Length: 242
Image 1: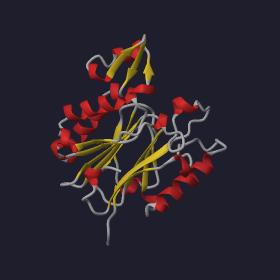
Image 2 (image 1 turned 180 degrees about the vertical axis):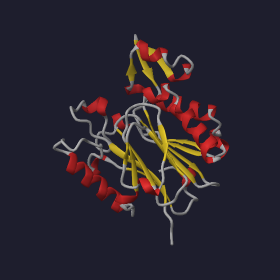
Image 3 (image 1 turned 120 degrees about the horizontal axis):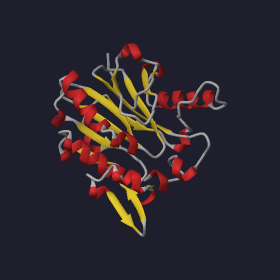
């Protein structure tokens, strides 16, 4: 998916597609709970990942990030939109349906992370929080981080109100005011925040795919407007080959 990760053995970064089915985490009371769990298991098996090694972020459109370990395998971590680990055979996941999946990898120390970042998470500086946590708690050097910004809704289709646009006044290059409508470029905001957090520009790769414009490939909540959100799953991890 990202060329910056091509030279790393046993490193997995992946995102499901619409054909794989919805991966959205749902309450057990939902009629689609079992279906979505089966979709997740099947997708992971196709990637050679044991479902019991997966750690999932609940997704609350916030800024909380947790460092996890093998002991968290099979768990959904409540109240978080980001996960980090320094252990192998721990696979981190978030779900997205317009928002950004952001993959983080520090190859020297073998530290990985994944973030779910919509406008709310970006406005709350989830990226800088992740970088600080990697630096302060995992002894990671931000300049060594390789960051992949995955498929998400593009600026052309992400219209926002004036109250949201005001929250991004420090990112004028990401806000387009056109024909009395305002459009926000989430990928541009994320790139700027990564650079501000110490990640080198040349270590950032951005997917140009817009999920809104690819109805056969990705879910888009803004496009589909479904009562129950359908989403793809983004996964990152390092296999430990014995």
